[in-house]
Image 1 (cartoon, one colour):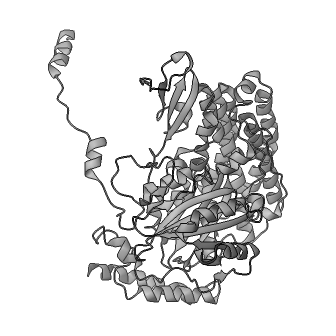
Image 2: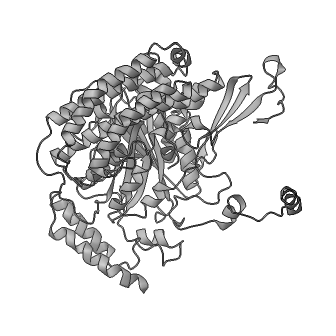
Image 3: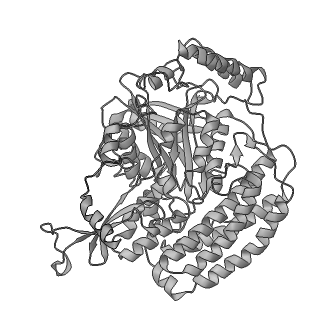
Length: 258
Length: 377
């Protein structure tokens, strides 16, 4: 395969860093080595966009990667935290995971309880997450039944605390909107809809925001190729087209001047 | 300009026809290619819709297909008048994932450059904002000082605007020999010049009429709208990422966070002017304490962060710029989300404009300090 010949120099280079591993420490280097080993047996890594047909590229490239939840050293459980315990007490089974990665707290909630949890997080005296810093989504085409992950990044101005709320959706499933809780989430949800095609139930004005309204597809989905040109759309809106001018009139004017 | 027939039940004052006015995308006071669709009753704005995306390049998608080092220059082009600040956000995000410790000297130099960039960005904002409202003189003065900063950048980084200042792990080059003296010289002239702008504007009757009481945003609403940066602090909320979640070498320095009282355009102006002075204070402290040593940490040639995710944000001149990155253990991010302060701040334009005049919309776009390169990404 053409891919293999292209990849060999890269893999040689990949072996270099673990040998002269600097500060980050042993666990990281192990992680690094494990990553490159697991990447080796799979022939088409994501680095080659050109030769592969556009649809297969990203999905195939990301298959060899291990399921991205448990980083060996950096993710810890945070059940001891007072607020997290209160949330768990209140929502019980709906909270499926509560971890901290690199000291950043993440809770995963079932979709049905998302709005209730968000209201609780905004209004509860211990939480007071009054600002929705960001709302975005991630596409995991390999996870059947949970292809999309909506991530809400919250910040509490009075408590100076951050929290990330995650929920999973199947492809084509709608996510409940949080715009009525944080008005700032409005454009962020519109962008998530624009880029991933996720519907937000209860959003007051769900339109595309960055792309033209008649644009086909949602570019941040993994199956959407990076080198893609929609000729039909471009022709319709941007391309030069010859127009039949009635040139006789212009000619006459110039002729008269001369 | 196009007219719309009256909808039933929509009759307004004097039964006048409601007019839909299209402002932009090629309008000088929209600071780029922003299209604002205004619904007007006479000269009063009754509804407003922003049409953005004319500059969309798909940086987040490109990010998924480039290695970590290759992505950095794309960040320069987000907020192209504050390229250094953007770089810092991304570079520190990757360093956080790699758990790399950056040398102290590099961090101090980063702070100096970022604060110089903040001054430059605020000066550009002040000049254009004042010109939008009708004070042309200020623009010329502001560009005079901004030029000095850009010259310092040019000699250090090699570029004036899209300055690719930082690398993952530190800086590519150490400061050139005259860097310190030149920055100190600039700091010597800056306070006098800022006073000059303030004499021109602070008590200027036209300036006051155009800014005081325009676009008042109470603190609670501003937080609810996810506003950040000087626009939020103008409403009296003391939220600055440099103090809230300190990064780089900021814990080493003493500085104030200026806040406004009324949350109007004039307060936001005062906050930014005070921020220029505070940035000068930070730079002076950083120059005094600038340690010796290397400027680059040991970073693997091929950057492969461990599986996981990170959110890192810094206080850019426009607000909180953040990066949310998911790594799957390969050399390219699985997902790179940019938290764009201009984009998120811009959505409060609708809330602020309704009830004001068309001319005030120009002032309000200016006060939000948006850069369309970052709004559209």
